[in-house]
Length: 275
Image (cartoon, rainbow, N blue to C red; front, side):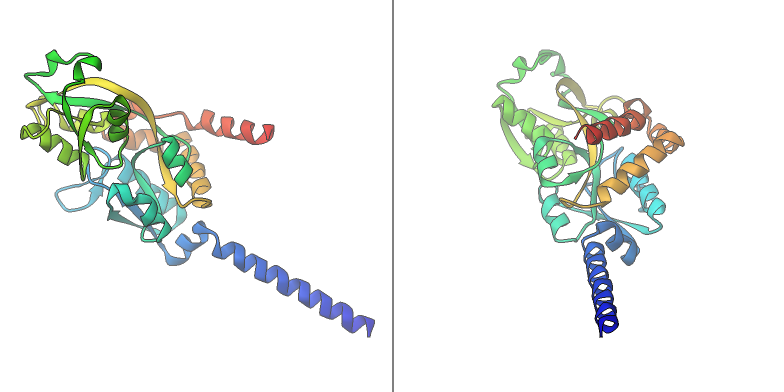
């Protein structure tokens, strides 16, 4: 009888362990992505981060990095255009798995998502008509202007913090169009986008960069509590050390904004040890 009871208890323990293992797997975004075989990446379209080439393929330094991460996981990549202000809702609804789109690591973003280590330095810069830029050299000079900003963006937050008037538009590209068409006095967009799209030899040679309002860092966003963020960090470290990141960023002439993933990984390890 004791032997039967022991066997029954052992079987029960194995069953319990199996149930817990299945529960853990069910909670794992990494397992979820690998099981379905596709990483769905939430983006908006702007160069040189995420944009389409002449053949309709998604390219840009973030698009290339996301595709390399999907390959690292052994899955396909799919890019999904989203409304930027709805990125957390899209993650939580599992219509996308990850946000990899020049996303500034603000306190609000890091509270709402599970974020990777920062991988890229950036700033929010003011865009003005080229023939007026010299009249607005300081942040204080901008006080009477009306700005166009992307809804839910770091640029919107920067202008809002200053107490300046602004109109929200769907994308940073729309913000540039508002200034070029004369509907707004100025726009605030990412520095990396401004370098690619504003000034001589670009599609907006009638516009120019003005003052920087903030300095910031980009990161990748996942669902809150997601183990996919740790996988991104592992990938970023490996891609930095083997030169993949530098190669991709150099392709788009932005290699100088790369952040050292080795030191970031060491800092994170030190913080865990301290805890």
